[in-house]
Each structure stands twice: as structure tokens, then as C-alpha cells.
Image 1 (cartoon, helix red, strand yellow):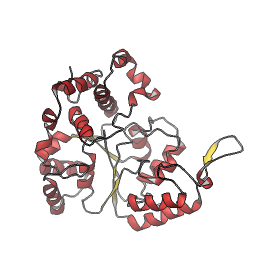
Image 2: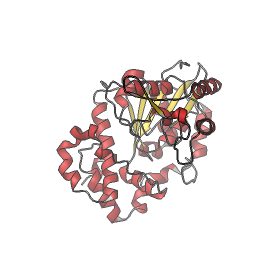
Image 3: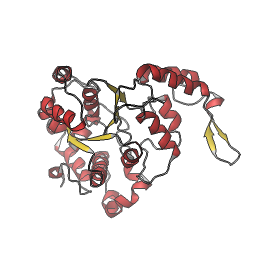
Image 4: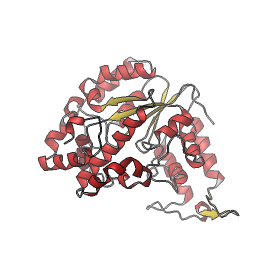
Length: 328
């Protein structure tokens, strides 16, 4: 297994909060290697294999015992995960016999029942060998890993405790997040984390208000609020976690990224600065080229008053400190 010389950097945030932008900039530093969404089972064969019985957003606290999660995130955080996800994912899916809907057509991948009654994926050793073989071409012991994941937001204490990465959380205005999801027509933008039983105790004091919500935009506002409220509580005991807002980065990208590099101990280079400047131009879709200053209050023109009120209604249920002025 390949080890990084330095602690890996783990970037997370709510989907559409700017994590890809931040990861691309940090990943452009000297001797940095970027790994984007390795735990997204919709695009990664390995994630599809190891998250078979897990929620798309796995939940794990510091005390959680899960060999499955420990092994899976160990692959990611210890450098034993392929970098070029697109090509490798295609190769492995073909070998495994996944159809276009992601269903397994090969018996060797289906679960088998062990003598003790437990179920275990019957994954061929060939695919694992291919995984490690390809990995060796992408990672070097001198590389520092930059990992971007929006699907690990509910298991940060677990990841922090077991692997000690440098955790960076990106916060973005909830209305901008919802607006971005709507603009890109992301069909699963409401991940329904408010229905997770693992969060029932956290949400219990607010359940009556949650039950009164009846609009998709309100539920999306609630979802953002849950993530932020959970992270705020966790950061009270994880003082080494780093937070930054998307708005701060957009207001002065070069200076704010320079400050972030200093906080996490990455050398600032002219190449990084040039990259930030080159990306500060019009763009659309999932690409990260944007005129940063135009993004700060974009939601005010993109959303109607009615839409804004609906988002506020959901976001305001929990006593979130970030963007408190948006709460009603």
C-alpha cells in the first residue's frame, strides 16, 4: 500500500458549494495529487463495490466500528486508490459485467452466503490486482494527496480519528447552493438526509417544524442547514479542522487561496496563482471556470422571492450560525 509522505488534505462541503474549485487549486501545488469523489459509487467501480450496503452519504461517528468503512476510506486516504477514475472505472465495469443501469450480470460479483450466515461480496481477485497495479502508475511516495468528497460529510469524525487528514470544510450560502442545483437540473439534489435514523436525536427538538415542510425547496434548505449545524457542533471539538466560505474565496481568490495554502502548509507558487487567475473567467455547467465576484450574490437574481422564502423556511429550522442573517 502506497503511503503519502505528508498528511492528506480532505476537502468536503455540501454538493455545489465550490469543493471542486478548491480541490483543483490545491491539487495544482507542487507534488500534490488530486483525487476527486473517490467515494461516489455512481462513477467509481471501487466505491460501488465497497459501499454496497452503505448509504450514499455514510454516517459514522468517532466511536463507530465499521471494518467496511475503515477499509474503504483507508484505500482512499493512504494512497491506494486509482487517480484516473474515468478510464479505470470503465475498464473495471466492463470486466465486472455491469450493465448500463449499474446492475451486476456476472455471478462472481454477487453476494455469497458464508457459513456463519453473513453475506460477502464475491469480488474476483483479478479486479483488485488491476486496481493496485494501476494505482502504482499514478501515485508516488513524494506526493501529498488532495481528496475531494461531498459524500463523506456525515462521517468526518470517523475519518479524522482513524486517518488524521487535514480537513477543510467549504461553506456556501444556502440559496446559492440550491440555485446552482436547480440551474444544473441535478435530479437527486434532495438527498433526504433529514430522514436518516442516525440523525434522529440531533433533529428530535426540531421534528415538529420539519414535519410541517411540504415544498422541495424547503427540504433542500433544511438539508443544507443540517449539514452546517452538524459540522458546527463537530468543529467545537475538532479545532484543527479548517473552514472557509465560498464567498470569502470569491471576493479575493488569490489572497484567500494564498492564506489557505499557508494554513495547511502548502508552498505557494506562481503556477498556482496563474491557475487561479486563468480560471476567473465566464463558464457554465460543471466546469469550474467562473467570474468569482459574480457568484457571491448570484442567487438574488437567479431565484424568485417565493423561491427564496421557501429555502429560508427549511434553512431556518435549525439554529445554524453560518448565514444566520438568511434565517427567518
